[in-house]
Length: 302
Image (cartoon, rainbow, N blue to C red; front, top):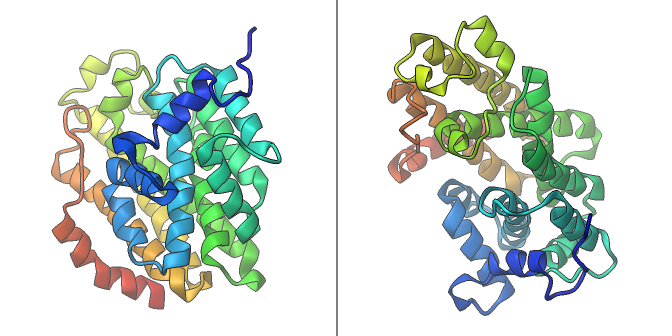
């Protein structure tokens, strides 16, 4: 199979760099900020609680993750081989791709293990080949790749108690699974249009809901119970993951706590929408995010 060459003019490098050159932005940081502005208001809210150095690094991490994710979700003709070549560039001594280069600098500055970033890229590649998940365990392995890895890398940027390393990283993994499961719950309808069903097949079978007939999910009590099950799982993971907040550095605790609270609130919005994740996209309004700040602060102190 033909692989594209590692040249700045190759298709995949054009595609990746085009994602960060919208509106003719002139500086590297402006390009990263634009990716965040376009893709995640909740993330922007949480990172605004960080000091300048950590804020910049976390936003570059997000830009790196979102670039690979967008290559899968927004560019349907992207091939596995193309992403693998972009990954090869990332692992090279001097990356040519702008986002790869930016994040490689962060990797070195904060001593982040390279395997986390590569696991994330493998998760994005998995999205191109796997459209369904048999069990919740299978789904968790995917959530680890595309979300827990982000939490693990964030720990190195924010800093954490090295004497509590195993506990801290274990809770970061749980937080990532909770966050990704929340995304999956919220985006069931959008993912269906992309030909993907992340909800575990075994849950459909147990709940007597027809996996192969999405039309039957509308206004179905069985489907509502299935979504309720995922919400229960996510909330349990959020609760467990918050035990690791005390091990983070003081500069990172409120930002992480706020992000967890805001995302967990999406689950409440799904419930308010009567579990309609097919035609409605749950979101948390800014007024509610601000209301959650005191609770987020309390989470940091417990």
